[in-house]
Image: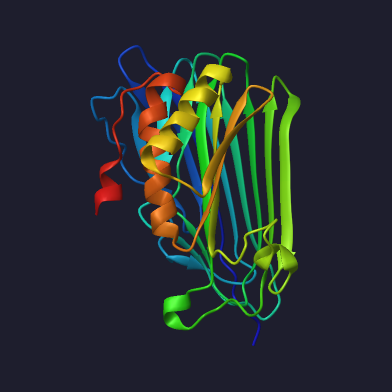
Length: 273
């Protein structure tokens, strides 16, 4: 029997209407929605992306496009981890395209990605911004489910991340590996850790980098490091527990938010549930 793959897309545009940030365009196809936005006192529009099936299997495809315009401030997250199930061969594909205009702020903070053993994921995130944009973006992933006996004995990941400023590439990264590859066990790679992630902030300078390193030292995040790449703050971490890494990133984000996004710390309510 031929498998029935889910294909879905979500197209959103946000703008400031003179009072607050509103959703100016909302189009969807398939099982992908956005919850009614929240407006906490931080001044940003908080939006939660919902994927009702709860996980993705081989052949499933998700495409998300977000535009932030006209001085809007937006925080986008998800209510739970994204699960990628075992596949007999077909790829699962996820594409995120993020556009941030002048004097706009986007925080793209999805909860973690769980790679089940036997999953085959191709994930791409592309950010197009301007020198006057502001954004904080993270990606957090975990490999297998050791507590359930899933030690990721098979599977592969192709993860592509790109940042363009005024149409010019500023940061391009790609990791591509399969279960058993040396990058997962070697000291120069994940060193046997099962959770990894990166947090990106723009604009950033040496003062932002110095402050970020102070945060890491003060809070004892020994397996998380910060660097500055062409005006972009890059913070990377590895742990044995995705929840631990997510909580560390939340703490770092709260302390950096005012500096980069020019907004008061205000974690989404969904993170506390």
